Image (cartoon, chains in turn brown, orange):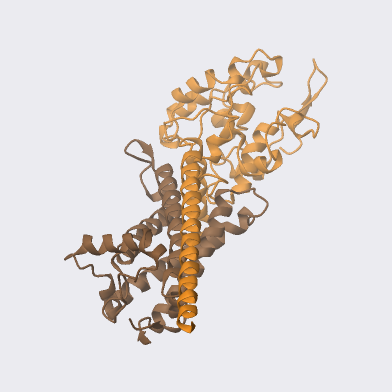
Length: 205
Length: 276
């Protein structure tokens, strides 16, 4: 059995706070989007909660970026291009085929590399592309009076609304896949436990 | 002034000529001397009937003082008004309709910017309701198609639905539409509609910033319109993709469970074999 301390306290706190903000944003966002459905929050309650949580998420995202700039955690998001496609292919073959035949995991967590290539690419996509765009579109909603009335001949407000909506759906999709993928560690709970304790434990092969 | 009135010789009705000083003082004309407008043949009493409100020419006076009316293009207003239901209707009640029918020159205020939105809406709608008071009748069916009419009337100006969407960027058109021509399409406000929605949203957004301040607006704001960001195509596509993903993940999970069971059976068989 090997044990690696991969998730420092700040990162775990950030992760679970981010998860909480995400869920609040999803619930309040859906309450605003599908307002009138009886099982959702009242519209007038959802709006200030959504706005306040959005502001907190913005701060949380900045903390994440700064954390990666100033601690060693950032190296886990640096993609190694040599053998990228080979590693990606191996990872996808494992999820699509090997996993059903009890094949060994093609990637082993080390201190230098805690994320496999597929994880790396999806986290980079989510944290450095989708999230900033979501945050920018959210703030643009709040201060749209300062934006031009039209963009490319289309109402700016409409572009912002559709962008925010589409990004929100993408992030809901990410959350669902993310929650499933964490169960694909050595045992169903291996990865989840690591995110609570900070320690990644794995049987030696 | 407060008790100025007379009984009309023909109709026998009391005609009240009193002007509320407070309202007048706060109105757009509050700084003007009475004689600025009432300077004609008013020397004799009773005044000649052709000097009635209808004869006071707002447009001529406003065009003489463009510095006070730079936001307004009176020829455009006139054009819009001529196309409005108030000018085109053959209803006897619409006869003699003029600027003063809506804009009481002794009380009219051009803008209430900075005040709470419900105040502005109530002020604006009161102008319409002063004639269309039958709408207050709970048995009136004219707006029965509108979900939650009282909520709409508290939050939306009559004009928001009863004027066409204009590209001029001016706050409101004078082309008041008839009931048949007005906006009865919910999605114009409650989905991606670029015109009416943007008009309402931006107006409220600006109000929010002015009344709550720049930063407080980030949390508290009245600008959102229910369902504004709804787009049935994006919603449908997203829900299909999310639904399919959940199905695929459930299938994947089931496959893993089967593999796990197979492995356990293999191990059990192997240990059985060892024992034998």
